[in-house]
Length: 401
Image 1 (cartoon, one colour):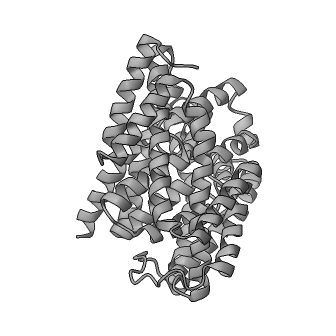
Image 2 (cartoon, one colour; image 1 turned 120 degrees about the horizontal axis):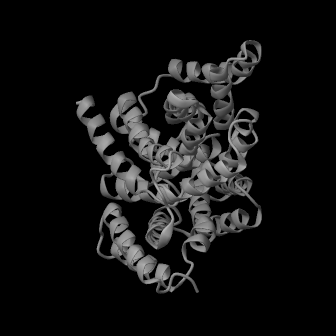
Image 3 (cartoon, one colour; image 1 turned 135 degrees about the horizontal axis):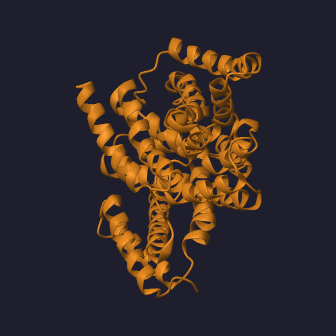
């Protein structure tokens, strides 16, 4: 049974891995559409809790949410299946880009990107609408969500998102007691406390020990692992933040030119899946000849491991506290804040970068209608948006204002 569920998880996340364009916020929209609305692996409230929890932890929030959903559905094997299926397609595309096998230039490539960005606008808008109905059903939580929108827009960077969630928790503690019922369905995390504590210890040992070992041995592979592990361990807010952090790592800066970094940065925005797969591109560039592919794999694993270790460290203790009256009130506020954060991200950067002309606007509105009214699956809407973008790119009509 576990193997069957793991196979189901792999197929589902592979589909998400090749169609989830638009960055971390859009990924959360794709996950909700496929795994909450259509497949009902978790409830809306549980999904909101997972999103809020992963926003608090360092690492790639959308990948952590995906890992947790795979864990809930198929245990450890399901979690690994979810991570691999969601991550490897974009990692492979970025490595192919590094060796020149994939090109994003010309009217066809640009049209495709326009269509896919427009689809991301539709997916995020649909997710915000659906989550708002469930997680902000009354005036108090609507106000919390609106305050979160303002905080996320006014305070720059991902720090604003953290502040919005903290403010949401505080407001929930004050205003939301008694507004939510205990969730009778616990998160089937299947992680023991012993495993959770062990993961926390391993996380700390690697963070402290890798730089020491790298310094003492001077081994290039240890240095590469240390650089990417540290980046994944210390970054809050997901992929957009890890890119400049990696650029500042001495091991990366000494091996990857500015032009190579910027080219990969641009490609990372265009491929589906998590932005953390940019590590595979950098690892490949840092490798030498026959070792390039191995370096890409080591960098990819190293940047994701700390976020997964922290998630496994926290999850075993979640079911013990989630239905506490105080915790439940705080999470009601946090869930409302998550809706506000997604709405703010929809405004910028999703809309500002995705709606650049009349053509992407029409594509986004059409795709939103297909999701909202025709109830089409997201993968089908992605294909339709991509084809529409290709037509716009080839004809050159409405690409810019």
